Image (tube, rainbow, N blue to C red; front, side, top):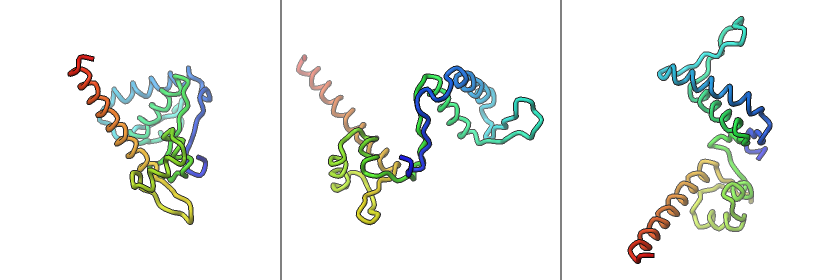
Length: 151
């Protein structure tokens, strides 16, 4: 996904202990300052002006550190990024031909770049949310039917 403008950190790349400690400090700070929209970040020695970061960026960093503390990898990808059909199929854990069928039937919007289809990450996530909701609803209906039949 290098051409997708993604930033990936592989599992184990970040020291889990350091990540956990940093994540706890960030979360503690955010809890102590719930209404603060801009977070000043001072250097360890305090000699320089503080770096000011948006609260949402700091929350995202805390999430990344929490994943790293658990030994998991993380990928950050902009919502407007465009994926190839293979990248999109890999993200949905389906075959490329199946993904192309979803594109051609209009389940997932795409655009053509020459002969190549491009899917926005945002459109792919929207399809995934819809599909997950439909699967949950079907499972709920089956569970209710099983209870009615005494199975």
